[in-house]
Image (cartoon, rainbow, N blue to C red):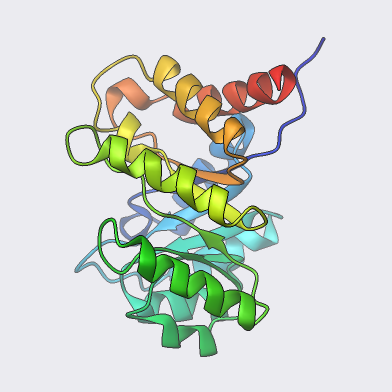
Length: 226
């Protein structure tokens, strides 16, 4: 049987988007989509101006791609939304006011590492406002809270059975110098069991250069085996 169906979407991050041309962004985006990406994530960089952010978003949208803007800078998230981005990463209680100026779907996160209570308060606020969102309790690297972070995903899904959950897998794949195919397969098994709705995939390190393809294959296998 051909494996084509899946449930979890792949956000594929172009980590240095602020530093490369719009044409280069388009080229990478096509490659990522060919490998299985559903959303192109534009990685903004600290202390780096992204003057062509709007141009890049409009160019990607003109090709029919869905786009997310990934920044710790609230003004870049607002600019991204106004330029037509579909998603912004990330919003927490500290910058929640930007939702008054952001019309697209936010990925919401804890205010501090492991602060699930702040995430839960934000989830309740989003439900109250009837806003679409993804909640991300944040996957931490091994020896920096990895096991505890898995527990947070488990508890979040048990407490909120109806919400969309998001997981950035790069903290594990990029920072664990091992065969990424096995790591991605295991992660997508967890994703499948917890009905996580989207993952953010990064392929920068040499051992992760096929992470999008591996994640795409794994999500289809896990869906079929469920």
